[in-house]
Structure formats: C-alpha cells, structure tokens
Length: 357
Ligand SMILES: *Cc1c(COP(=O)(O)O)cnc(C)c1O
Image (tube, rainbow, N blue to C red; front, side, top):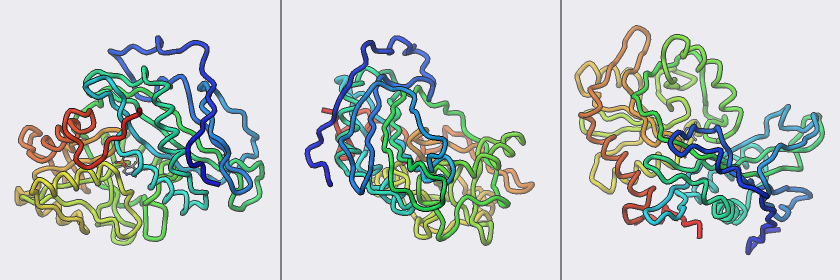
C-alpha cells in the first residue's frame, strides 16, 4: 500500500509544554516538542500514521530491536525564515537516505509522504517549538525500529516509524581536537558504514570514550586495511583544504555516510569556483601537507554542527595544529552561505527548502 494523499490521524495535547523552554538557554536534546508521529508496518503494509502527544512507549521485552539492532534513524532540521515561518532543509534527501539504510538492514521502505508530508504536518502543529533566535533550530529525529515480539533471529516483519523533534540551541563552535584512530575501525567495504544504523553509533562509544579521557574531542576514523586512509570524524563527514584544493573522502566503498551537509557543501563549493576533489586521502598526505605549511583548513560537516572547525589532528606523536580560524576562507564562507540558505535569508536556487505549509 502507498499512502498517496497523506491522511494523518491527529490527537492533540490538552496543554502545551512549550513554557518549559527557556528561549535564551536551549539545550540540545533536553526537551521534546508536544507531539510525535508514529506509523506501524504490518503484513507488508504501512498503516495510517498518527500524530499524538509525545509520550512513553510500552513494548514487550522480547521486541527484536532491543536484541538484534534493526534500528535506523535520520537527523533533519527546521528553521524559522525571516517571516517566522518554519522551513525544513532537504528532508527528501534524508528520506532517500533512510530508505538506503532500510534496505541494508532488511527493513521496509518508508513512503515519501509518511516521511516528508508527515514531518511537515508534525512541524506545522508544533510550529511554536521551532526557535527563532540566531543559530537555533528544531532538530527532527525520524527513526525506524523492528518490533516483532520474538527473540528468534530472523529479519523482522513488524516495524515502527516515528518522528520526534527537539529544539536545538546555538552549537558550541570551539574548534575540536582530533585523534587519528588507527586501532578501532568504524566502517569497511561491505559493511554498514554508509547507513545511519544505530549500531554504527553503539560501536563508536568505547573508542570515543577512550580518546575523550585522553583529552581529545573526536576521532578521525581510518580504513580497516591500511589504517591510513581517512573516513569521517566522529559522526561527521570531513573536509581538508590542502593548498587551494578542498578534498574529502569519496563515497565509493560504502564506508562513508553520505551527508546531506556534505552534498550541500560540495555543491556550493563547485558552484562558486572552488577546486574540489572527492578521493582517497591518507594521513601521510595530510602530515606531509602540514609539514609543508599547506594544510590550511580542516572541518567536519553534519546537520547538528553544520561546519565544525578542527583545531588540531594528532597522529601518534605528531600533533598537527591548524592555522588560526580567522584565516580560514573556505570554512567561514561556507558556514555563512549555508546559514543564509537554511534560514531562508538567501534565494533557494537548489530547491533545498521545504516550507511546512
Ligand atoms: C549523520 C551523519 C553524518 C552527517 O550527515 P548529515 O546528513 O550532513 O547530517 C556524517 N557521518 C555520519 C557517520 C553520520 O551518522
């Protein structure tokens, strides 16, 4: 079944919790908006989605995803445009990616209208939860889990798709200190590195905890064979400026998560005449460039942080510090350009913005 004109059953809260929010001090992930969207998949079909008050769930302890991790998610953001109307940044790209993740995890496709249309209706209803001050947004978390009540091992047959949302404050933009990881591996060809599967996050917790104890903020992951070729930082895509060329790892091996921010950055750079390369980048090349004074910028990209500048990369006993952030032409330009598009201050020439209404 495909739901063609999305008919969502709506049950509204009796009283909004919006007064719990202090607009001057919004902490990411602390508060959740009044409503959530929920849709069940059973007998090979999606049922009518519902928007209901945000509440706890009741699930059998035998629910499969608790045990075997058929669980995927997405991260999207809504912003207030200059007229105070909520707009969503590239939700269809997240929808497509969710279905790439779903396929790899033997989960069903989520129809576009449940994902995008359902999201629009949810945000419209909770529009007061989209903050309007500088650098704030509404973080949107669509996710899908397997909910068979069965602890035998097999791909599940019942699934639950949900969307919850949470106001997000200005991202703490202190440049991050990076540890180049050449022992633990995040992704390898044939694996699930390209998906937004919960398991990718679960496996990264221990190595991340270790490097945090050592005083670093994030890991630069390397490949599983040579431990030399860089993949991503933490849960962000990574870019470097070497001389006048911007480089980022290519996505051909299924090891890199294809970020919507990554794609937006590549598009903007290419349109504006920057020299860009998607290719294999080894840590030795970065170390050589640093030694020659050619490693000019390094930054992560993702929905949560947008552009996250890197202040130093540590590989064994080589701590490579980057030049002062004020001198970074590319990252600073990108950050402003992206923000202007996301907040609807600049013409949307790529059809990236989806208005809620
Ligand atoms: C979500 C994610 C990103 C960033 O993707 P965006 O669509 O830009 O938010 C990058 N790497 C990993 C591993 C991720 O999970």
